[in-house]
Image (cartoon, rainbow over all chains, first blue to last red; front, side):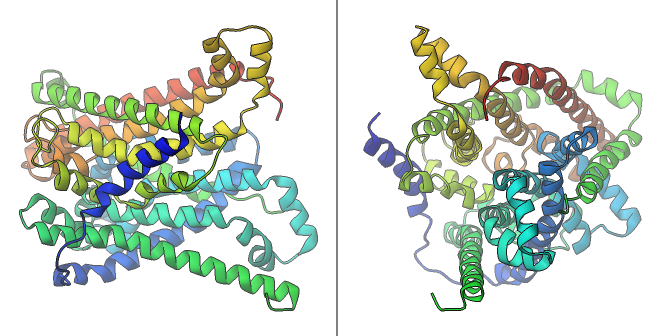
Length: 244
Length: 254
């Protein structure tokens, strides 16, 4: 197959639909702006929890052997194959009893269901790609585990860390039904404002909302790429003792 | 070296999933399940969901498979462009369908063909399957196919023995993930689907949130039945298909 033809087809099908989403005028919809605080806070919290729990679980699945870890892997991937939304009906009743319903924390916990399985998979693949031998050698180079993460493991895992943040952000932003159900409309996130706009007739308002929906992950991704470049530059400078 | 810890993840995920299932079961009686058998709305909704989910999955898989094979030996800008839909939340992708397909008959939103829904999922899921399969394609040992050529195997058998058996399980797994996701999705079908019959996720969610309290046991019963069905498929997948594919691909040199 012709390489140029394939490239043109892919680019056309993927990029062309994105051209028309820019509205003629862009005004800040106050209702959307109001949700940004909660939305960003939720993204940060969900992403942080995903990194913490996913790092530990991914490493365990990559490097531990035995029956337990096989079962653990299966249990962790359950939400990928089961109807999470339908199971959250039952969770909602429990959250009411625990006082977590309509609360930020309740929504945060439930949002781990559609995100954490992907995170653990990404971390497992990342650690497997690095390999056990390489990681054991890093122990010889640097004994302090925090320093080891800062100088070696973190920069080596950069593609994994970036994919996790991106994927978790996109999934979190997309959740309407889960947030409505568990948050009871009290925890207001971006999707709760965007969804009604899409079923309505206001074309420009819907386009503006889409800009937020697609723009937020993009901005966050650009931010993290900058963060990692800076991190690696600092590591280089500290290790070299000279400016690059 | 610290070898990680899977307990927090297992505790949180299995805890929430299994407890959610347990509460759902405890909210229902046998009669609720019996009434499901004669629920024609549910059957229609299930049929529609199966049609949308299987066609989206098969089409995405086919395209992603071809693309992954094409990009095994090369890299380039197009590979990065393919990552773009991963940035777009499903809600945003559904809006693209509303924006461009609204005035087109048959494939537009709210048409019984549900093609707008399927196209949206192809747009979102093809890159997912592509990036799931690409590393597998790149790790394949091309010497198996060369050996097949040497032994004079036909093109199809050469592909099957050289690549197919290694790709079978990852491709099935990625398809299963996409299939289950589309089957129970709410946001996209709620925006693009028709009022009747609804996709199963929309039907049950509306039953739970908009119906009166007497409808809730039905919603719980449907959740339980669907979850158990998927659990059975997953069990078959893990203890029946996985050993077969592992045996098939055994003996490869890493």
